[in-house]
Length: 608
Image (cartoon, rainbow, N blue to C red; front, side):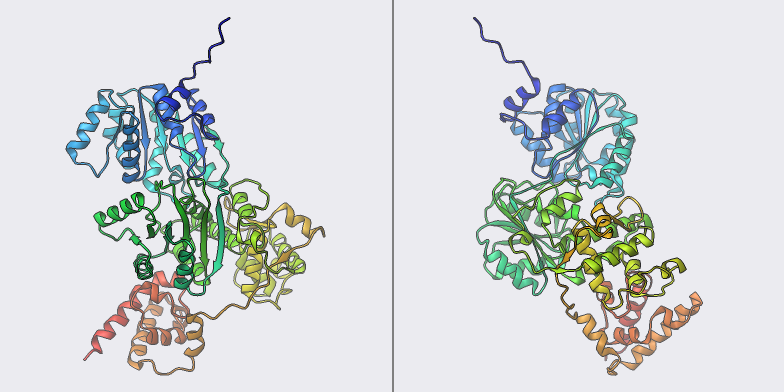
């Protein structure tokens, strides 16, 4: 009797014969089957889960041409090289090639000799290219790093926005959009922008249990980093810094300590950047010190740690950046330093962004969720996964689980916060809620809010204490930030239960805030009189001119205290001007350059 033959499965044949894999990873087969059925797919899959196979396998099963949209030349090059090594005819048309090379690649595509064509969105969405592709047998379109499509995402790229036209231009061609980094608001926006909500959304688990999570308060960044790297000597890692200057400085400090460290940022010469990246990718025990310019498409399996010397932009950015560690499944560490100055700088970046108020509100809400993660009094992994819509048990592999901190009963204060949020309609951010608790009669304070029972009932606590409690409550699941609306605070079900008298809230003790250099200087300003009188006079003249132009009193522009601080500090650039007493994001944007110009000109005129 003949044995029954195994059912022929083209996708598994391709998986084994072309890529050499015996089975699909979780989530891959569902995405592939949906595409092969002719339907659109939005696939949310964690970093390192094999997203590229979700379109490469169906491309080879379906035949014809698959067009892949990719944001980075280096990523295209790597994928094309890997496919060619696997015996797949793949091409890339991009800016790193000569015109002759791009023309030759297109001729091979037009002749039907290529199965996959990689392009950046701005090259694809030209009238000439779209017209040419319309004449070919395009069977599938894949959009990688799809979070760049969404204007509500943290990595919006305008050139990606044009991809929304593809569904109309190729109505019979399924589209798959893939990303590892999208919260619910961003996912919903991608589904509307690319698919008009006509796509199956597949969300694979976000958990990377092999990555240990730690957040530490900043004390001495260089020492904290050097101590950490010393524990990982001989291992590959990535150190993320906020600025190019800091990147260079940290790399030098690591090299001085005997670490094979390289720098990477957008201000470097292109050849130097590529040389450093190639060394990192091909050599063991190299530590890359980089800005966020480094990372997208980096697929090095043995990265043992990711260290953030500064606060990242959002939980999405943080998740994506730490996801570059431990791709081999072995133990890895994600270690972040967190300081108060980081918060101020991130707020400034958001406020200075050339974007509408609605996007800014959402970005502030995203930042607030990241701060709640930093302030977490319960398992960090639980909080991180909940942000992406997953539930989890305490992980035992984060600093909060490993070393539980002292907790104090803060139930009554939590109820005051919840009452203020409920009484103001769950529409306002932390700033207004704290003003209600402190009893501050601000311009935004309505008579109804001032009449709340809780108004002024929090006056015994300082503003930063209430801020910390609100972040801890968000981290504990009592509150959430409304990313899809006004960015205000909303009460979660757990918070409603606490308001009804069920349960309790325990918080980490709130330590007194250490004085920053800026604060210490501000306290001394009034008593100091050694500032250059002629510079102060010049600054006052400028202030008067600006006040007259705007028809406001001079102190509205800047107080005398601010002018004295300017004269003493003599800031050289916008970053230093932002440290001046009384300079917030708006004043930095509106007045920074004109005051800096006066300070520079005075310096030149007073030089002998």
